[in-house]
Amino acid sequence: MSGTKYHDRVLGGLLRAANVLRKLVKHRDAWPFLKPVDVASLGLDDYHTIVKEPMDLGTVKTRLQNQEYDHPDKAQTDIALVFNNCLAYNPQEHDVSRMAKTLKEYFEQLWVEDVSSFMEDANEDSARRKRPLALLDPRMLTQLHGLYRLHGLYLFPARIFFCETTFIFAKGDQKLIEQHTALLTFDPRAENEPNSTQRFLTFDPRVQKTNQQHTALLTDP
Image (cartoon, rainbow, N blue to C red; front, side):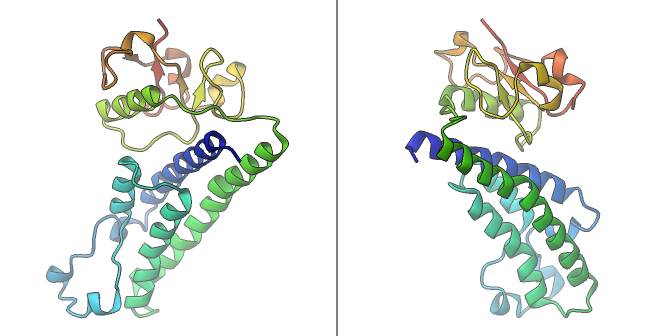
């Protein structure tokens, strides 16, 4: 597999990992796992003796946001670690253990349905050379980060669609706009302003009705 195709497959997997995390944190049992365990206030003197590598969903979110993962498998490992740590430290009958089991099962289901299936499809597509994914323009990625931070959003949408004048990054075509959470094109006017987060970014009314918090358009020239 070429470097470009590998990059596209990994990026697509990370986008879907972020979507899985977004669903996890909304689960009613997620609240104990959103922040690091406050060992001092809870009086858990032996916590670090048992749990060698603490992890929480908030930390995973930050790492995804800061592009610290170079493969979705590493995000998967960290998310699983959150629940495994809980189950290793707490008695099986404890409420938080029950919550960890519930959320772990939910996570595993989401991961298989969203991330694993995508990675498998991408591998098949690459092998067959039917739908090679184009390398994401780093200028576009920079603007995308800026747009989401501008509007207080820190997780990418589940799917991203680049119009045909740029690159097709996700499955589908322009007739299926409503099935995608974002329609993005790179604005050449921002060529010399790679860190632009507002001047050249607008919402596209054609896709706003799909999900108003997760739709965006980088404007055409």
